[in-house]
Length: 409
Image 1 (tube, helix red, strand yellow):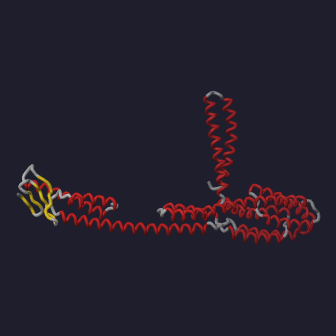
Image 2 (cartoon, rainbow, N blue to C red):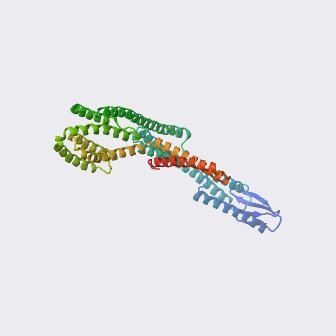
Image 3 (cartoon, rainbow, N blue to C red):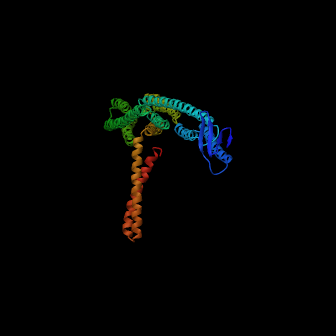
């Protein structure tokens, strides 16, 4: 019989291991000496020691899940409980018990960490919702629209909450975005309607101005023209494609009348020359407003200059086009700045322009393929006919591209 501190082999070849509960049968050994039998089962014990050590390090230093760790512990515990090794099995059991405690502790830590992260995500999403609801009432269409898009990206980067809480917050967030989009669309639709009303009103003003252009009732007609000018300014801006033409007709009708009146009142040349000097000073003051950096301030300053301008009266006929042209150039620059600001905040118009450009480009590409096919088939007459049609489509495409450039892309 052979033995060591943790096990022995009896005369029948049965191997035992010593535990706190007494000796336990490890197995039977008939193939060699008792020493070899103990050495074999001691190696199995060392194998368990290595496996448990590895698991201890994994639990301590890696993100091994509690479920996988528990499965591995139970697997090792089964091997220890089956007593198929010679060594301090009770010590291994204690190490496994401590591992269970470590895994449970980590499980609770992760549970608390997950709860903390969930709470932080909920607070972050609630903050996003509150900001989105505030932006929903904004009239800063461009800035608010860009900020809402940024909030969506931030929302997507945050972890999901429980389904009910996440859905409720998303519903509020989505509703705020929809409300803003609806208001913005209504705003631009209202602008379009206002510009159409302005066009109709200015058409009527132009018609009356033209009907008065040959009047010789100097005082009453001049007074009426001043009223018409006030009505013109009050009417607001028409669509860009109509505004300049209407203005040219309106101003041209006044020019005819005032030129005629100027010829009759030639003796007022001295006064008109003085008026010219004063208007040149105002023109210089107005030109200092360019380039426009602060649209609101420039608009207010130009309004003040223009009121003083209108109060001065007329200048010599030969000087009028140049001096008025200087003022109108400043006014046009301010109007262009207003138009650019409006266009930059009108994504619907840009989308329409981009869509038209895409359709025309498809048509050009299709015609080019048809021409190439006709050439390849030797049908030059058809190719020439299609070529003429292609030139027309290219001209339309060039116009559409220029229009799209005005939107900045």
